[in-house]
Length: 227
Image 1: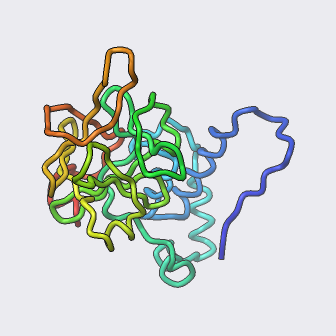
Image 2: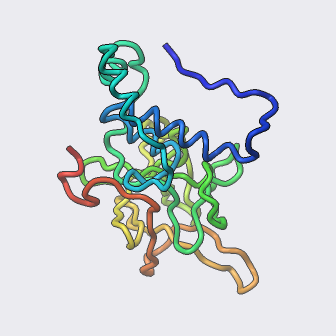
């Protein structure tokens, strides 16, 4: 069972479809996805509270769903689409910035860069909360940010490969503070090699640089957020 949206080649009604597509996505989420609707907000990088998009009155659609006696989205995931993994551990998502944003950089490639914030997918990260650790998951292809503990560059690796290789992928981070690797104790920071050069993203001894995640979820930094 799959749901798809087929677009016409010529779009006479508006040039920028992103607003209409986001509105449609939120309507689907609010009517059909129950407690899993947050995944749509993650996917579109929208705040769960006050997303800034008026998706209209969906009460009649909810009534139709009730009248048709439709099953829950939880049932759908467990019985129809078990490959869909709910993102239950996410406590932050969107851009990670200190005036400018972390970007995954050229692909293929494993070196993240700093780039002016534009909030599109190369800059959308997810911060997962696992026990007392933080994993910064880059993009939607499960690429994790790691500290190789050699040289001054951070490294991006497929998360499953990072786990197999035992890479340093756990980070100690609270909103508005340093991003420190749990094992190496080095911080993710930006530097300029000279006044005219662009900022570089490096791993180095912590100097107190402060970072912010664009959107936060639940009680950031509290153990109750893991439940």
